[in-house]
Length: 492
Image: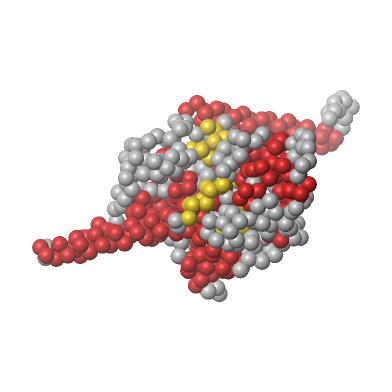
């Protein structure tokens, strides 16, 4: 823009009319520049002076000493008499503490604490699990009661504040890889029960790796601004217009079970996109499917028994088989929930607004038996052939027709026909299953499919996945060798 120079012949009125505009704009620009400079200096100061907080403060789910309930019970029951009354009080306190720990274990299962806080099965709850984000890698902390490397010096108040407000022991903001956005809805009594259970664990001395976040995302204080837009602190309030079963399901799904963390897409700040709740998202290369009651895009065709059976065993016969992170959820969490709680979850999910996601045909309604083996008999194969790869690697378990072996028996080899992974709009989950296999342990039944990532290259896995979708599932779902290479790199 050209700023015209005032001539000496300009009138006083014209000069007065023009001066404010001429001065105001440079002043504004200078003000913005000064503010930006101050902000930049503040960032630099934090980068050079902020001490790195121990990861043990990052995803707190336990503390060492379960003060409070059991100690109050001892004091109240003993009274002034002492003696036998004190002994009885001690027994009552032990019983109370035992019940509290047992209840806390159940609730910790519902919260699936094990999944994120166990990288090594020989060190349960000791943390160290890498969690990939668009901004770098976070490592889950040690949440055993070890006072030095765990969180053994947390108080009740600090524990509750972390769970419900996302604030760590030292007052620092916690990264939302820890789902305090959901745990904020959990009642205090349930959180303290979880605390009592985690206090009963064997302390493990182990320091997880340091987080690997680039600047400025390694500045925890910036989470204050993230929370303004993405976090709404407050406890779950039952809806009096709904049934107790619905309210129980809502409490679990929106709180402890934190289902939205995987099944709701995220906005550009990686907060949950509330406009598309439960419509599906991608986690570590795996698609967490739409679980709204839409009949095409979601689980609207599933019966109550389908939902309950899937959460309890990882299998909904003729519909889906849990793999990847969902297999871990079933193995570590939902298989331990009562039938009442599983049914409550189903009741709540059925009440959600349906979201189709553009799908017009349900994932489990694709496929028919194949007779591809006839083409291969005596044929000379040139190049990479998906049919040949299927017969060589998959047909012994899934049958060359794709219909599986064993029907609906607990240890059956599942059919690839009417299978959510095969009928999905994209073939990423299928490719991930081929790469990494399936390992799911539920109530005495071990389900195992070997991964072929070390046996087949990217081109072969792409050809195999495309053969399966074209013959047994959604023929529009395809992957390329480059897609497989990208999926292969995703940390699991």
